Amino acid sequence: KAGVTQTPRYLIKTRGQQVTLSCSPISGHRSVSWYQQTPGQGLQFLFEYFSETQRNKGNFPGRFSGRQFSNSRSEMNVSTLELGDSALYLCASSFGAGAGETQYFGPGTRLLVL
Amino acid sequence: DQQVKQNSPSLSVQEGRISILNCDYTNSMFDYFLWYKKYPAEGPTFLISISSIKDKNEDGRFTVFLNKSAKHLSLHIVPSQPGDSAVYFCAASAFSGGSNYKLTFGKGTLLTVNP
Image (cartoon, rainbow over all chains, first blue to last red; front, side, top):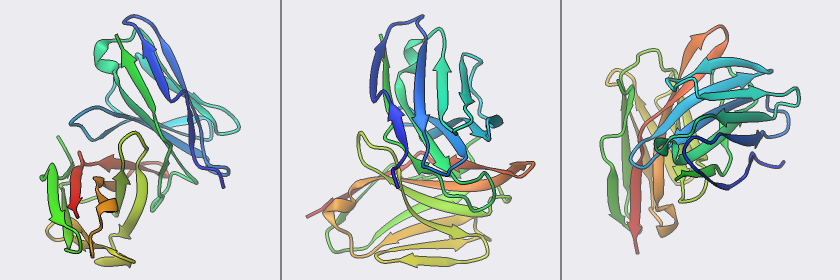
C-alpha cells in the first residue's frame, strides 16, 4: 500500500502571499489531520477532516483553512502568509477518527516565507 | 497548557545500552498512547502504541510502559543502535466529542546513539 503523499515537498513564498498544500492519504483511510512543526516545538495540531467534514480544529488563526474531497484527499490553505508561518507542515491519515486509531504521516511540506 | 510533556529535549546513550525516553501527561481522559520516531526531513513514523487498559506493550527491541496512576509512560529501546538516533515524539489520544478522538503530541526528545 502506498503511504501518505504530500505535495509540494518544498515551497518558498513571500509575506502576504497565500499557499495551498496537498495531501493524499493511504488508500482506504478516511481521516486526514494536519500539523505544523517549528523548531523547538512539537507537532501542533491544525485540524482534522473525516468524510469531508472538519471534526477537530486547533488554536490557529482563521488564515489557516482546509478541506477534504470525496476521495479523502485534503488540501490546506494559508492566506496572507507571515514570516512565522515558516514550518514543516505534516499531514497524517488514519482509517477512522475513533479510539485507538493510529495516524500515519506523510513526509511533510517545508514552507519558507521570506 | 501542554498536556503531553517530554521533559528531556535530548538523550545520549552508547550503542548496545538501553535508551529510556520518558513522557508525562496531565489529561486523565487520555486512553491511547503512541510513540513516533522522526528523522530529519521525513515525517514521523509510527513505532509502538499502548492502550490504557495495559501497562506494557512490547515489539522487538521496543517496549512501552504505562503507569496510569503517575500519568507517565516510557519507551525502552534495548539494545540501542546508531540507526535509532532520531527525535522521538510521545502522543496521547482523548475523546473530543461525537465519535472523534484527537491526538496530542509532546515536543519530542532527540536520541543520539553513539557507536
